[in-house]
Amino acid sequence: MTASPVAAAAGGVRVRVRLTPKAARDRIDGLAADADGAVALKVSVTAVPEDGKANAALIKLLAKEWKVAKSALTLVQGATDRRKVIHVAGDPDELGGRLATWMERLT
Image (cartoon, rainbow, N blue to C red; front, side, top):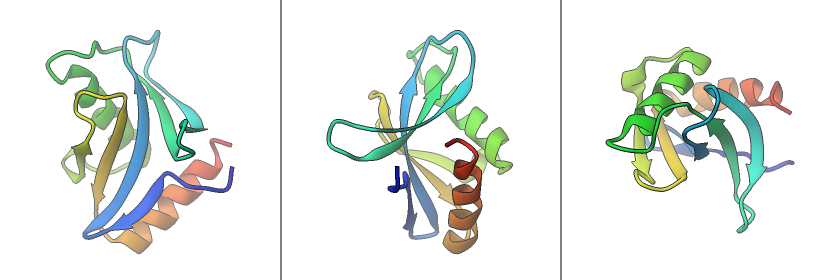
């Protein structure tokens, strides 16, 4: 898979995510292409999809994995959908490179 779920954005990067709530454990399952061909980071969380609990668990897991503050991550699209877009605040070049290196370990 050559496409990346990471794209540069103003003030950081945006990451496409496919979230599965109510999973057996919190984990990152790798990369997957959606039906429209867009590549997304597959993430599973144990939290239920109500009152934003699954979204909060997603932010917490990604912040821990990427070693960034939770406040640097913002859900910008998909609050009630499995397909989400997360904005990571910071230098786009530095974040893009760091996340690309991190994602290489997933494949």
